[in-house]
Length: 230
Ligand SMILES: [Zn+2]
Image (cartoon, rainbow, N blue to C red):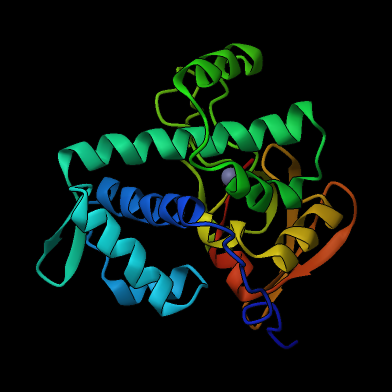
């Protein structure tokens, strides 16, 4: 089976705020893992023109959000706080879109990008109340500061998980921008919170029984999806 999904999705980032939020998301994830990210990795993970990535980096370096560290870019102390706020608001917006407005699950990431950078402290506080301080975004990624973050110490990448029943835990940020992959996961019902089953594997592909029907998931989806064996 060919791996056709990896090159087919191009994100159009509509404004600098949403691009900055995406860059901050990647930098925060690296920060939490104690890693550094260079411009090339940012460009590989965020499918926009290199010039746009360079402009976003220049902005973050210029306003003190980030600083150069060796070959990489690291968040400053103030930048870590800014990134945490931006990521929290992005993931709360995704929750609002999915849970209250009823937008289809696979669409909420890109829709939330349009809202990046506009939320006030007041609206964020009301949204936390309205949504009941959710622990994760609809893709299972933790919402910073939530008191309700789930713990799945046994979660593993789908590509490494043993056959048998699993709980789908998380779709990584990398995959959140991949519309085709998300539609595949939604159509078969292999989404965070669902009980599913791993049936068999072939050449990196994983045949799963989703909560809706069976599907063959390609290698890059299996690499960016986390499940907890049941
Ligand atoms: Zn998300």
